[in-house]
Amino acid sequence: MPEARAVALAIDALRRGWPVRIAGADGALDLLAIETADDARLAAFDPDRRAAILLSGGRAATLKLANQADAAAPDRPVLVDRAPWLDLPAAHALADPALDLLTPLKGPFRAAHFDSLDAAAAALELARLAGLLPAYFVLPEVRPRAAAKENTVTAAAIRAYESPVRLVIAARARLPVAAAEKAEIVAFRNADDAAEHVALVIGTPDGKPPLVRLHSECLTGDVLGSLKCDCGPQLHAALHEIAEARWGILLYLRQEGRGIGLINKLRAYALQDQGFDTVDANVRLGFAIDARDFGVAARMLSLLGQDEVRLLTNNPAKVAGLEAAGIRVVERVPHQLPSNPHNEAYLATKRDRTGHQL
Image (spheres, rainbow, N blue to C red):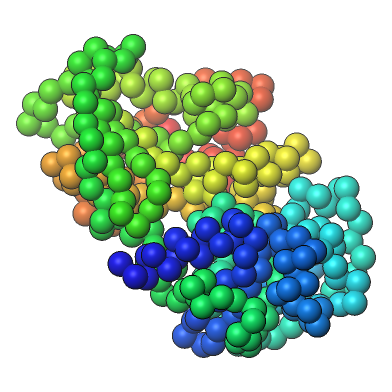
């Protein structure tokens, strides 16, 4: 698909510090990601030093640059006028809330009105797909020297990029695991996305809905044994519970950090060390509270021939996400594990602010 190829090229360009152009329904924007920019790239992109700064509404609200409507919508873009002192280090300070206690902001800064909201909102989503902070130098009008033609992408293509429609089974093999010797691993690939999701099918289908666990990748918890979350214990407990049920599926989704990526998750950890909970940390970074797409899980289950499941979860959003994508959840099975001194606040936040239930 040409549109998906354009998004993939734009993601690669952002990570390399190259400019991109996003064409929306209400205008086009030339953009340079602040996180991967350097002085030479910024000078080439903006020789006249007039590029404004594009931030999310959540980040702008933290900086007192957004009105209440913007602050209530953390994905809403906000444009900050370029000031004479707004150089690359100052832009980094605006973009990264983890630096707030280390870098005094010069200011004052002023939010400006602009019309290209469709392209700007897509730019924030493109940064998430690239695993970068949602912050850019931006030129609101089309300038031929600002972005190469091959790095032009439409806002509509960005919004459609993570669609699970083209997800297919790529490989499968027998995989005995500690929790269940009779298990099969199934790998899924999306032609439009580099992420490779896997399912572990345990036991033998018995005509009843399988016990299913949706587990989002967590390197720190699953591999390194982090005590800041309950991901590792949840993963292993789910495998054992599915094995005891004698038939079920664990879906391992490559959606690290609730969809914001590993590096941004570590930035959120730094904010948590400053006293913010997981919800506020994500919003201060400029992301949604939960950016995961459970339609991917639904597509995986469909490819495995399952349209009804018993879902092992405390998260109502997972139930709603599967059902919205055509998978019937016949039962929600609670998944409770003991806390530790390092994750008590994290678990309380999931209960009190994101609606997790027992």
